[in-house]
Image (cartoon, rainbow, N blue to C red; front, side, top):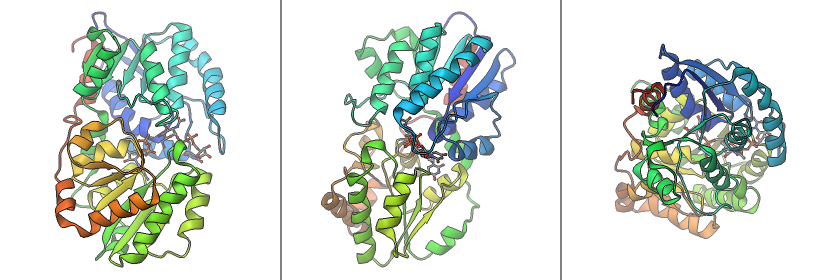
Length: 369
Ligand code: UD1
Ligand code: UDP
């Protein structure tokens, strides 16, 4: 990087960004030569606050933009309008954003308008289909046009950026800060009432929230899961459901009166990681969970048609199954009945780094990396 950075601002707004940025916030705050400020957009509220509490991070600015059933227009205009003053007041030497949310894209755009250098954490993930995931693939590609410093989690992500003619000197392979977080959360000694409830059964952990899955795809997913639960009386499903009311309505309608499916409010990250570590398998359309599960050796059926995380597929832990009801039913059944197929997917592998990604990013920012 050459010159030393003195003032760093981290901007994030949703649960996954917070889980992967808080370890970096805390690492940067330990560095004497750097002044670190945190601006949260509040794109998520409860789910963001849960993470801030676990990592003991107090934001300097909170844009409080969340609205019920917010549209992409709402998020975009509200973040852009509100972040301008924060950036002009603070005048950071560099702003760090994470990943691919609307908070990420719009904050990057604001930095571009104000000509503030941008660093992109978890840079270079790609599906090359801007509608899958939607709008995330567009967001991350757009951020790469703006960002000066690119912190790629893997060599593959770096290669994507190089293929797009990004400057090789500005790309750093650091590992994923998701692993930094995971190293601090999973404990040998852990208990939870829902684990007691699931004792003696095979525990399936479910999450789903992707915008492109709302509506029919989500109905297909839930119907396939319900059918399997009715057929296999030795499984129990824990579903810490996203706060999105649209998802809640669909889940409650389809899963009603299915007593081996427990729908609960979102877990904080400590609970989520510990429950995942004890699950038989995971069903999810989440991005972050695709990074965490390989480390824990938990087979994941990915409820999407594409993934920007091919490393987990190559490691054998993830399988893309899409949202077709019959296909999901068949793949789910195979993992419950075919021991060989199950074991092939449950070998722990970690393609996402050694848990020192935050340290590397902080070193680079200090100009000593
Ligand atoms: C957002 C990101 C997505 C990321 C996901 C992580 C965008 C466009 N989408 O999607 O990339 O994978 O976060 O979870 O940036 N809600 C609450 N409380 C909360 C959070 C959400 O009530 O703490 C409800 C609100 O009604 C909100 C709705 O959920 O309007 C949807 O939230 P939003 O951030 O727009 O979309 P996500 O699906 O969470
Ligand atoms: N997670 C959590 N509580 C939950 C569900 C997920 O803390 O109830 C964590 C999970 O461990 C991962 C992150 O949230 O680190 C993933 O967030 P999400 O699936 O909402 O977003 P994505 O990663 O798809 O952008």
